[in-house]
Length: 334
Image 1 (cartoon, rainbow, N blue to C red):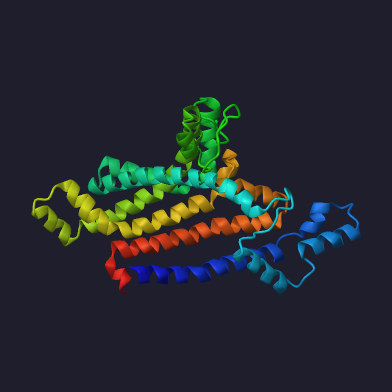
Image 2 (cartoon, rainbow, N blue to C red):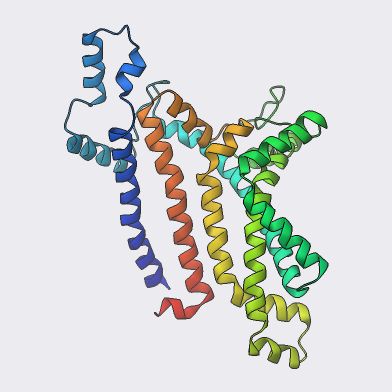
């Protein structure tokens, strides 16, 4: 198993290097020149030349790329032109908010998607099966940002049940320890902050989770139906095993590999696709930070944010590969 994990780690390195390279050249080749945009039309030639020299834009592109790679591997992702602060520090401050929202959304997706998919496979062709798959088809067709806007209008504006933006009200202060509001509230015993943190997460998480759970439910149903028809499932039932044991211990475990693949991609997508959802909900995470960087033509912010969000896909694919080896030993020895 250790050899299998090391092999997957080595395979992930060139993928990550490729992501870094693509992000760098896209920003340098296709993005507008940030110097003129930052200084404005009234800037003198001397100021423009000085800023280009300061940013290293006068050097050949390959030299810039080499320096950028050296900075990345030393943990230096540059300095924000807007705030004049190290980008890595600002991202680390905002990353817990993105992870917290992503994990809560994933929890909703897993609970709803797996339970609906398994139940629909057991009750094939029933009213529940047909209705859940119809709703699942609608769910995979609805963009997350549209769902977010509709939930804001209904539950935030019309009914006033849930807050529509931010992580905490301005009237509540919370000591930052880990950056995760729920964890920090529990550590410090700030129960009012805990309740408000959960209230601020409910609508956001449900919005993200429901859209993701639609695909999970449909995939779970199809894979479970394929496994349930196998001979070893009929044998398990003939031996007198309880139906719950047959479904969960035998059928679901053997159907879990494609489901885990989907969930891993979804989690990477929830974290990596935080730009849309965080912008709609004004969630102070990495996605919102990237949008502000794009609007300000801040090279360092956009590059660093793209690296962090893209790395989430690489990390989740690595985790999925490792889980493959655990669930199916044949993969480890292939």
